[in-house]
Length: 425
Length: 70
Image (cartoon, rainbow over the protein chains, first blue to last red):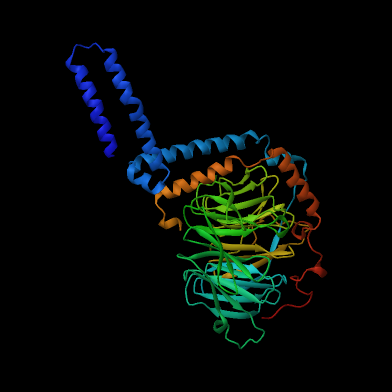
């Protein structure tokens, strides 16, 4: 700031002449001071303005700590304002509105199928639209396609990497996508010929700079949405492997994503290690809404069937419901006795039930409207890592670190209900 | 990518986002909760996990007198 030093010297000369004499400021001194003071301040503010319009230069000119503190203060002010705006409309709780709804009564679910065949922890699974096929992926790199009715394995692929954390079935049922520590999402077309080597036809679609945490086809086989440990989500064209849109906004790893039900338009929600759940516009790449009420990593997000809300499961041992039109959290599903994180969540067809798979090996079933727990499901012998409702809503499948997947549906109502309701179900 | 960004850049990104979010339109919880509840009640009739499935329609129900050998 060469100009600054020159101005300072003007100041100095004026002040020095004043200090020499007795402390009586003559009119001349005052005028000369003002004469230099006004343009000097104008000059310095002018120079500051010029430099502050170029952000890169501003960080060099101004102390880095100052900018950080200012930004943080502004951010906190806005966050408070946002909370105030949201609080104004928080006139009632969801469970209060739902008081007149009938309770669900005794809820029994039974395991109908146990899919055994993975040699290591099952990390992810997805249903095919035909309501009977399931694709699952595990820590040892194996991706298996099952027929859930017969428990037969229809296809098996070994990925070149371990920890295949994401897998998805294509809407047509003709392909599966998977990825994990290889930082990629690859699409394998499924052939009817059982002898054909699936790995030969593999197509690498997505490339991230860190692990792939989740993937999902959009409404067609042509596009895939991915989320990654590099903090971004991305939309890819399957055929060309081209990046169509990327989504920046998370400050840490993104762990999960879910597309909005098709009727409600082109949005999706993502959850990450920064405790935030973000709702994105797929066309513009903009984050439309953001929610930060969880106290730990968000492991799973799932849209409510109507598309107006979504649920999240987190390492803070709670599941929460966020209403998109009210722009706030409207329910917390938690109990003091539940201390292990929720790894995956899904709704039943009507959205009345929320299934949460937890790290304490159980699945808790919640009444979404009333906020109460309806049932605990036992059976897995290790963490439940993934959970999804079948497309027609008749059953749901859970995958676990105990190497198995279990398909459960509503148990028939017994005339006599055994005292120990903790039967494996 | 988030991991490569400095703290300042992350804060700036958050600030931009917050400015947009403060002005999004919102509705009161009483209205949206009622809508959610109504939607849920209307859909409950078709939710097979709530109504249950009769044995003959359930693909997972084993045939009486038989079992699946895999």
